[in-house]
Amino acid sequence: MAILTTSIITVIVTFLAKEGATKVYETVIETLSIEAINKIKNVFTKDGKPKEVISELQEKPDSVARQNAVKALIEKSIEDDPEIENAFMEFFQKIPNGITTNISHSKNVNTGDINSAGGDIDLRIGDGI
Image (cartoon, rainbow, N blue to C red; front, side):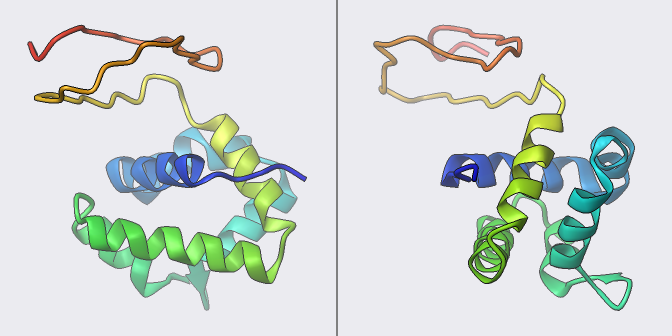
């Protein structure tokens, strides 16, 4: 079974928050297996409608509290049904490369290798934007 780390869940939630449900469907969901689609759909919807935490995330995608609520929903779902973890790993692997994360005004320094898992990295050194 795949190990779904906190950082992978964070990438999934960030993608959901930034792209919204329509974009996620167009770019990712249609490329997943039917089993993965059904498992993920059951996590995020109830009676054919998005669960409240998903709707709230779409209203305020930059809200850390709302992102954390969706992370908790994913983690709880995996605890209840470990097979869901495989569906989310498949989802994570289908997220398009090119998600950009900007870190500025940080004094933290990477002294090791950066593994992009096959994606492109736009790396700028320093605080310049």
